[in-house]
Length: 243
Image 1: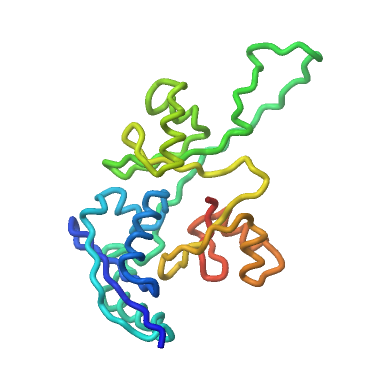
Image 2 (image 1 turned 45 degrees about the vertical axis):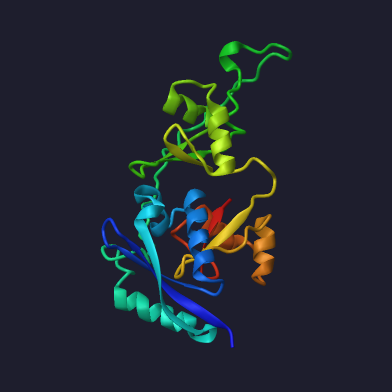
């Protein structure tokens, strides 16, 4: 008989709780939460871990049960501890939506062949990937149009992008922030899903189509809707994000 575990995570700074389930063991489940927090996961528990520090959270096992009953027991304890209430815990999807101001893009006049004015020289933004920064002290998040813009905004130096790039690759801090690349300029976009109830992450899929195929769906329109409206629309019981 396969056994799963229901566990409770408690934030010792404010008493807020999270109820989760795992079939891989609580040590691995806790490590997965830490990894997701470092990867800038927007889920309530992971945002709190970034803000308050992993050391202020403790995990304890509540119950072992047959995996066929694990979803039922999970819901039982979520209701018992009221962790689906944002004032009591982190089993909810009340995540602050980020509003972006989209400015109209001016139409560029055609230039004489072979003559490129300095004032019209491209800044690379049309190829740049947006970057998310999270202040490790306050948890405040900010979305930048490019690494260069983030570098100037945080350090005042447009040439300080190297440390930010390394921080994104390795999950480290740079200039007091954690960093994540929000979009990619590659043809295929890597995606992953987060279960809207348990907050556990799927594997990272190499493309949108491969994720849809794995869930037995021949079309991608609903999955793309979730990707374009993160934390607002779900697909197949998961919220979907770009890696």
